[in-house]
Image (cartoon, rainbow, N blue to C red; front, side, top):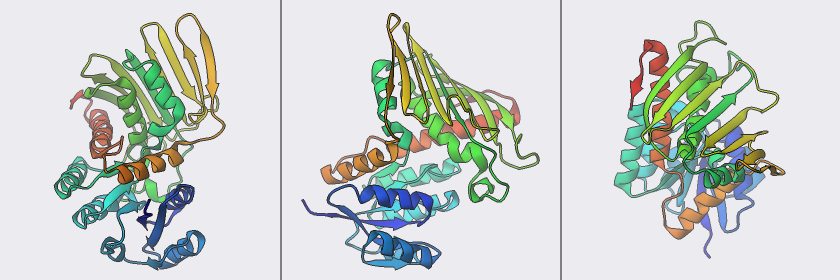
Length: 322
């Protein structure tokens, strides 16, 4: 098989993890790196190998040898970079969230469709084996609950910035809303929420959210997100499914799960977090096979729509219809 040539835009912490993952996947390699700080791109070139580093993403996008690009930049740059990549005919893996506004998400999805390229949001939680096993075990639960709780984000953290990151709920909430939607087996219909800027009083963006979601099939979801503190018993990530006498609780950063079929209860464990590597395996397989990945631009758009609906519900006190 020929080697798939990739370009990486954004040489920070997440870009580093993706590059480490690609190094473990046969017949795929990064040949180019771009970052506004060219020294960061040069550092990646020295560490992971390739052909060149640049401060300008256009050099990567205009390289005809590159089949797909990874966009691992700050959230406010996602839409313009993804649109430029689509117009350049590149397939895209993009870090979450897709974008911070619905209009940007829709524009990205439209450009990708028009260009005939694929876009895969980096929803790593989708690929944790216990998440997938829970979905198979209880494919349409009557109730899904999801929680992502973090330690308080520093005031100077870039993702806390309203323009660059959108603060905790807008930055990380799409992980939770995507998994709740995926596990529900249905599309969201109505959202109600309470919350606000509780960890960062006076900040324009919400940092705590407790939301209720009604799905089109009549089943319901509960979503908690914020940076008040980490749940020490269940960990940062925690999801529950209930229905038809069955239940699943997934915890310890998705490495442990308790299953019950109503008569028997058992625990399953994974030795490590596998989501990031497995999402990269899926992206490369989709490129290799010429198909859409299992997570698409539509999934990224829907996850952000739920987050934005919850934000509107918090600010207006009104139930939001999707």
